Length: 85
Image 1: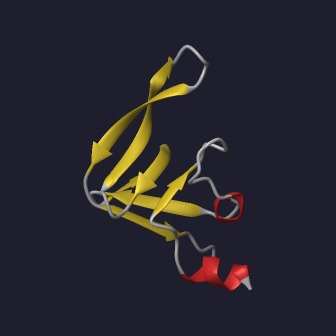
Image 2 (image 1 turned 60 degrees about the vertical axis):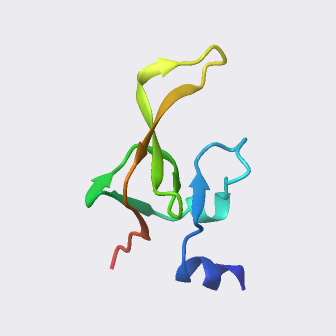
């Protein structure tokens, strides 16, 4: 089952943008946490563990198509599933 594989591990790269090839609704439906440089981040738009970066929204700025502008930050990325108990 695919449910069991999503329980075991997160993908190397994941995006919250449905237009991205790295978007996965099944995984995003679960509660995912991101630790970046040891600190919890709640505003991550996309991450890549192997390349060591995250994209976060740059305030309320938007591009000409209405999408949020993002900033790419580099460092140690640790995605995990949050468990309620």
